[in-house]
Length: 186
Image (cartoon, rainbow, N blue to C red; front, side, top):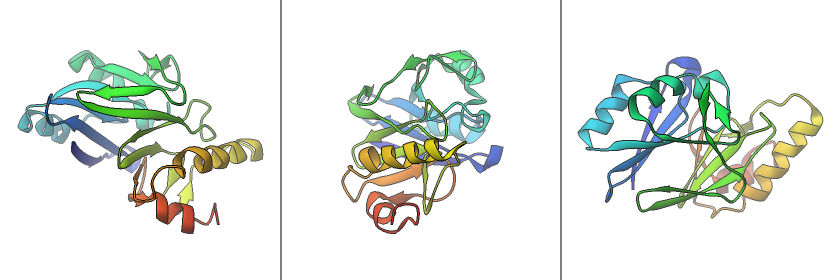
């Protein structure tokens, strides 16, 4: 597996490229901005951007999707049918996303947004704004907050403890650290 983290200028969002080293097929997680460094990374690795996974439809995570879709024509995955003005394949909890020989699983993580969805690829989980290192994403009500906490406990914290958590903002963490020390869960 090929993996690279990009920190975008727009709201200091994290974006990630995950690729299959065998098939040279790549997936972009969140598309708040398209940076020249991303294109160089794809070109240098002889990778084809075939997929985009959007964790939630806020401009800082999906704002450049139209530009990316026009240039690369990737298959777009999200928790709803349209994100960033682009048609998407709507994923539900447990649905599979394939990138070459890699296989990932969609995990429902609503609360920050109704369509919030995370992507687990063995050893990694991309949580968008649902879960951060030491925090969680903001919600609009106590009921949505509880929904988000419950989904994180059931879906993210059920992953192996050494799974790396790649959030939408801030540093990476692990399931072990967040389930044991994140103040929103202890």
